[in-house]
Image 1 (tube, rainbow, N blue to C red):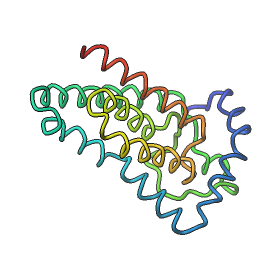
Image 2 (spheres, helix red, strand yellow; image 1 turned 45 degrees about the vertical axis):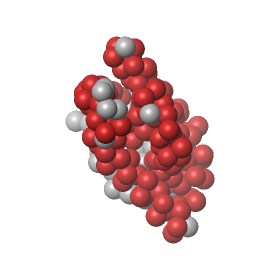
Image 3 (spheres, rainbow, N blue to C red; image 1 turned 180 degrees about the vertical axis):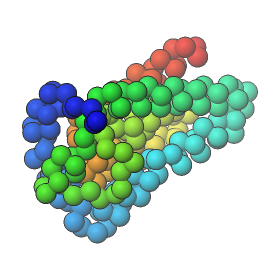
Image 4 (cartoon, rainbow, N blue to C red; image 1 turned 60 degrees about the vertical axis):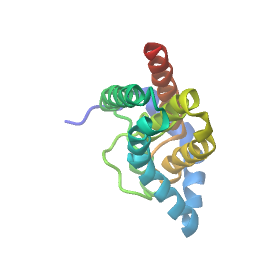
Length: 180
């Protein structure tokens, strides 16, 4: 038996579906759709694993410590994110509004809240801002594109992306605080 979607999400879905539909409609333009798909795939894991692995190269004396910090932060965030996602069970826009919003990329599961791609993008931007701010001109636009891709591909509502960003921000701040 599938878990029931909380009523608050049903109301949010109706408020957001027109915005999501308009945004997803832009994906009919092939170059934009290709850009969104690439950004989404990059946001899956490759750029973040590369950033974690590069920590010893970016920070000579603290590199291994940063590698451990980023790895632990990412793993803890992933576990908490999965717990939230599987407990709240908000269906993705392309599932809820099957005739109005197209799916531009295969989804890993049925549920959209919160956006894990956006959570990781924001989390790593905040960590990078504290440790290697010179990388931000690359990471900030990439992170924004990743967040936009999730809505543009019909995989998330705008509130999923905002919640993912807030959770990523919180994990990064907690990590910075705990790592001293």
